[in-house]
Length: 591
Ligand code: ASP
Image 1 (cartoon, rainbow, N blue to C red):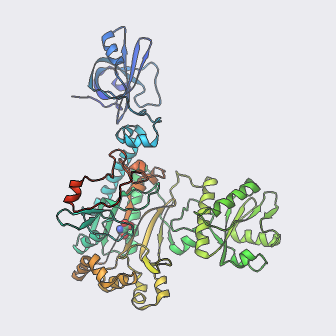
Image 2: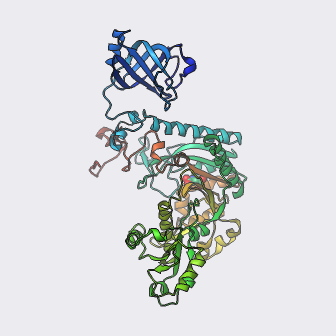
Image 3: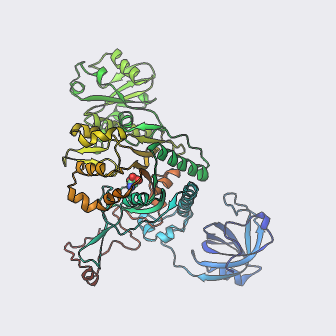
């Protein structure tokens, strides 16, 4: 037996017991004839002691143990004289009677402690050591608990867990595919799934009724902090359901997981239309932990001789509560520069300060009377002490810019409290999105998303403007300004599906070539169906109040898409290339 107990288990009630423990040497200190070792495993840390006077030989052996040696020890549980309240095992220690080294260790390249001295790069290179650190390990264990809670809940609702293949054809989520050459089919390639979308729809045609899978998805996109080239979705699909039933089902799932794991009762998820989200929050994933909604000042502000406003399509503003007297002119100048950065793209920023002393000051004060400015404040529901921040320009752009500014002000005012969860459903998305650059429609969700029932007839016959106005049975789940997942009711009628492909610019040939199998399946009794996919890594991160999903992935890639531990991607040798009928023309550039 390697151990009778783990390193996080022993308590005062075990005092006097003979125990055997195994684990890693976290620290090893000598203090006046006593040797103290912290022995670590996944469950915790237990202090081992050895007294030079009573057992010199054993003490010598203990002293020789380096950090991260794997050892097995025997001893008796004793009460500790100086207790450590920070540690679950802090009331006891083990007085050693024997020890053996199971495996020696090189000195690790960084300290394996909660606060490590290792930088990001080195920790990723030695990720297996980083994962030995308790805070890192605990996120992975958290992830496992969430996965189990999801499985438990879905199974209790009759969902069947089904795996779908990884070596497939391109799927329609709109990113680039990762491709895999086929040796047996020279010159042909598989694509790795961007999601199991088409397969889960086929499973509904097969009659499985309720499907789920915790599944890897692969998208070759430019990476950001919250993106990985391979990530995990909780992917689900249901038959004979309306949008309302899908929303109820997955709201129920998320609430049950929050309750199970965090012991938090989430509020009922409010519903917000896409249009309201854009006009009130300037974003399709609003953070509703705080108010500060966008208000339209166009009518109140135009026609008073301020040419910038007068010539703008719209004038929109937000009121930052209690912020008027916190911003000096210099701060306001900096904030103006902030909105002018290319990422935001505003031309300028107008402010109105409603100071605590009752005075009003504005960067456009010479164009408007105090009464007029007070009229704006009233319209926005602003009160003494608030700072109005106003942008103008083309409607959609201005909404988005103000949406960014709203989040920034939310951060500055400390209104984005990580311990609060504010979920909602965003619904009624447009079906299609017109792209000026490519002069064509894109699917806002994906090409299998159904237009709303009342829009279906118009979709078959309507003109360009009608197409722009079509609404979809599509929905996103948003928590704290993060899109946790999205889905839709699917088109299950071949005609409608063909029309959608046509609107999206597929020729008949292209549609048949790429999705003929699905359209074919729709000829054999496809039930009405719909589903959703939740970003599993992201779900875990948000539950823990974290921004980055990387901490919840055991072996993540860096932001160049590289795994620096195994050094992937890497070139293939010539033999392998020949076998795969591949000819590499570009010099490989290591990043
Ligand atoms: N396949 C979709 C996605 O990955 C989700 C869905 O429509 O169910 O976003």
